Image 1 (cartoon, rainbow, N blue to C red):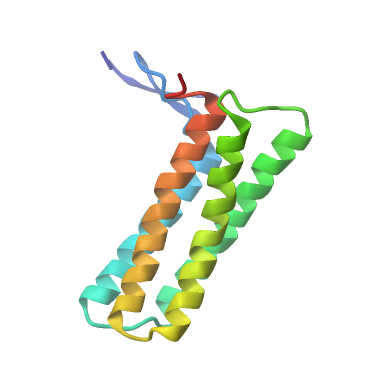
Image 2: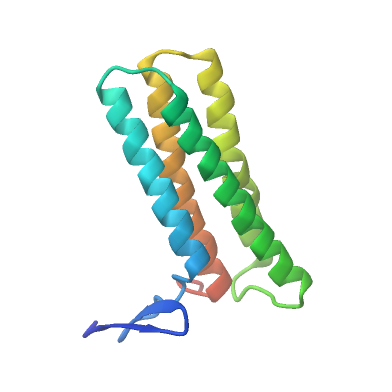
Length: 143
């Protein structure tokens, strides 16, 4: 049973569980993805097509994803390896690297409010897949 939340060593761990995969890079990816999803969803609900703000926040999301991808690559080249299957980790990372870029290209051809919802979905997908990548790296939920 989870009894308290402890912050130590740059990771957030829930005592009584195995959630120490929330390192700074994962938190940055989660926050950026969810903020991008929220901003784009609100813009879509207000009837706005993709604009400077929604495309800009998606570009920021893409930059954060690229940095996180680089961090995992540097860790791997430095001799570290994931606790979970490496093929699964890299499948997630390559996919999450493409999601914002593909959504951005898609919205350049669809200027309706639905294009903005595509950007919102991309932000949510990046957050979820980024968190799962960290879980694979640290072995959370790996059987």
